[in-house]
Image (cartoon, rainbow, N blue to C red; front, side, top):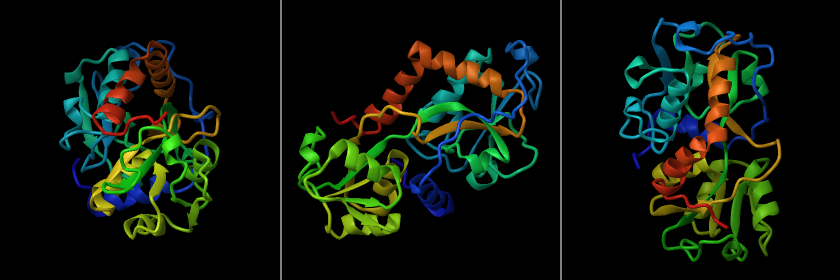
Length: 285
């Protein structure tokens, strides 16, 4: 995994682990065109689909800092969506957009941005989001030489001392899914929880999976992702959406494409390939 460094990595850590309000697609967005064929779409450049993401583009969301290669979860999702809209790979153009500026108000120079951006009511005031293409799951992090580093089931984690950040979905997951013998140790900030694991005050750290990738790559040497907790049912799950200019008429067609990818099982296969198998984050049972 590429090391995460600089402001972009710091932004990922802060935004991914912060408590998130759940939000859906922007209800005020204009309706999509009657047809979702390529020639009828409201594009920035006719005949070309312009997709944005940050640089560097980190693994496992992208691979080798090259969004156009189709490898990594979000690159694969972008091309799967574009394919449903009728675009060939050479008709997709990538542009750079920083995470922080992507959801700022104002016109955009891209058709959609894909960059692990959680849908929140605050952001929806400035931009339009598609339906979710990824429901954020919780990752379990341990030191490589820790007692629970090789656990393969949730039951094996019950005796562990677990660190979480207050007010996060990770705390709910510990209480509702792991149900440990010891009460989790709750910290005010993510960095405090990270330091608790680093200093061996706890056995495990539970954070959302995007943050788990960051923690193991950049914050704690000799740490690993033990696995991820199964997705829970319910409507309160944090999710990532494709981001567009406020009121974009493209939203309906993107939602249709995402819906087709979900119903066919293709989106689940992409997630399995890039966020479970190759990323070393097996789902714990």
